[in-house]
Length: 346
Ligand SMILES: NC(=O)C1=CN([C@@H]2O[C@H](COP(=O)(O)OP(=O)(O)OC[C@H]3O[C@@H](n4cnc5c(N)ncnc54)[C@H](OP(=O)(O)O)[C@@H]3O)[C@@H](O)[C@H]2O)C=CC1
Ligand SMILES: CC(=O)N[C@@H](CCC(=O)OP(=O)(O)O)C(=O)O
Picture 1: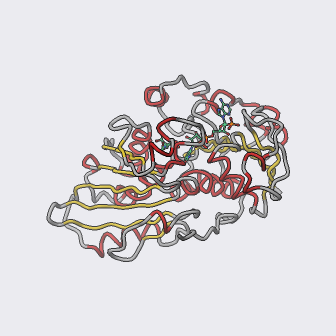
Picture 2: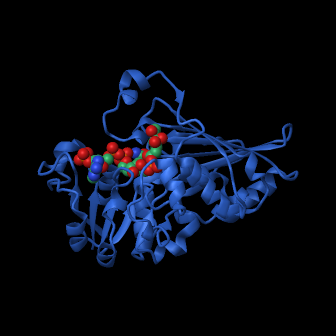
Picture 3: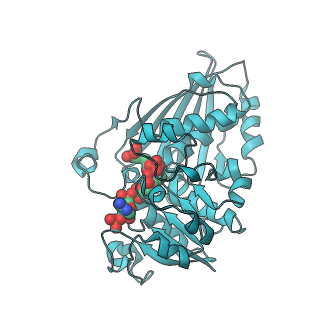
């Protein structure tokens, strides 16, 4: 049995980790880490866990937790994991960080986009970017995994095969993405109040959202060139889900069958990536509660552009599900263990 500690177990991503890991047959949660609910029963924080989790919340003492757990998930704000990290911790346990602290290889880029100083840049190089479908082999041997962002998981996986095969002009890529409000976390913030979000839609972080350099870096590795994109996120009045619509100019004339063959080359055997039938557009409802990424595309020969679409559940494939997929790889378990979650509907 793998002993698991979760720091930030009382947040939305941490709560989803608890939900998924509670049904994982090879994992046992030994630490429900919190800042605000120390010594309170976890099931009093999340009553969906009544009679499922009996434990009380503990603190965020990562050094102590490292002695007890085989793996620690940090589902905490940006900067926390980096401020705690040490060689001693990594010698005792594995870390899967759900924040952005180790996602971006260039520390100056991280500090510029996140507006904080990185407290342990010495570990950035060894951290593996945990986008399982792309970095599977590296994840298997990792001590420290940087779990990708929610918008980024969706945006990168949707465009990756075409970037890799060089059929789109990467510098024409526009990513227009929408997210449900759970993406903003559980902390009380005025812009996320019911009256602000309900019956409303808005763009935010225009030309400045911190997921931009993460998408650019990963698609840059795929295409082998420097990539600059426009990324515009939107907040929409739903709980979960991300829909990314991506536009790029085609470098040459291609048919539906040729592009479909490219997606199949990369994703045919991927359990969690579903390339939908021709003309079916992904919808967030069809992936809700699951670890699936639904993808499709349409060629617009009139404008010589291709429109790619992807949908995920931000808390599952965009956070906790992908983190558990990474854990499974790191511990040599079947990649799907605990993740055979059938999408819920309606
Ligand atoms: N929500 C999402 O869809 C996604 C989130 N992420 C990332 O996951 C991480 C957590 O996000 P999310 O769950 O949404 O956020 P929440 O605000 O819902 O939860 C934050 C968690 O971190 C704890 N916490 C807050 N401040 C500190 C601190 N200074 N030190 C230690 N612990 C602290 C909180 O504890 P307490 O509540 O007990 O005070 C809570 O458990 C973030 O890095 C986020 O970017 C990544 C992908 C998707
Ligand atoms: C709707 C909403 O506010 N979404 C968050 C998503 C980012 C997130 O959760 O952060 P990481 O994926 O980088 O860890 C945001 O835009 O900041």
